[in-house]
Image (tube, rainbow over all chains, first blue to last red; front, side, top):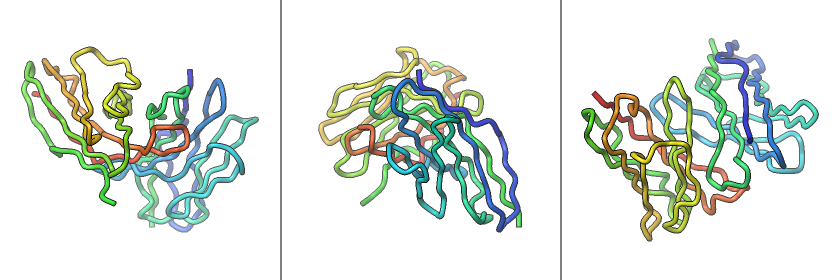
Length: 114
Length: 114
């Protein structure tokens, strides 16, 4: 069965510094990986996805993610954090060719301080 | 295009009652998925509908049911409500629900069971 893990419940970063939110995955076939962000009292917003191709995936709001097959990781990164990036971030994997079913990590709370 | 619309935004119900939540997907999207989000269990997949047929189902009791109409709008129903059903219920749509299409989420319905 597919699964993802986000090892950090919370990440604290100073504004302007680079940020990394970690995600590791376990899949039985080709990985279809996603990152979503959730702001308070809102739904999830799609940031980026990895299906195949380049290991560095660029997404919305200046975020990017690096797919590493040997380490089974898909870490989310941003070169320079903004206070407005503070939110809850979810890594997800598509489940075994089951269309709209995503398996989500437990989420990482990102806090960016001025 | 308008985003995914969920109604109502907030609901308060009493144990034993039933509730119906509504979701209007993005125009042209045929796949609608439902997720439950709670602080303890995180995001859990309920079910997915595609062209009025349930395509995938999560591990929830039969009290949780759904349906999809010919215009792709979807409803989910929870009968005999329990305190543990208090959660944010998120609906997501995608064009096909296939591996390459990201899910687009609504802002959710916050259900409180007292």
